[in-house]
Amino acid sequence: MSCNIAIGHSPVEREPFWPAQALQAPERQALAIGMLSGTCSVSQTARENGVSRKFLYAQADKARTALEESHGTYTHVYQHP
Image: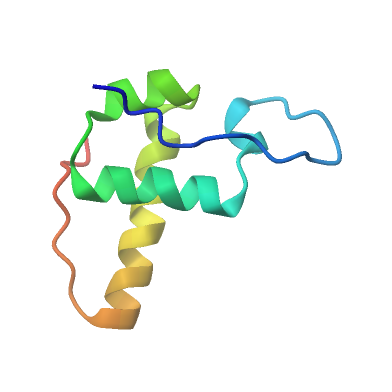
């Protein structure tokens, strides 16, 4: 099963130093949704998208916070290390 969620990188003004810097908001959101849904492992998602697990956890935390603020308490499925 492939967990390569972020598809196609949009152009940026300068060459990114890290792959995560090239991700646009919709791609970051797709990764966060994948993390919150628990459908793929963090390691596999990070490896297939060229980003760190730390980056994925940060994106998931931002998404979880946004959900909590807009819809009340949200129970996440991943375990933060």
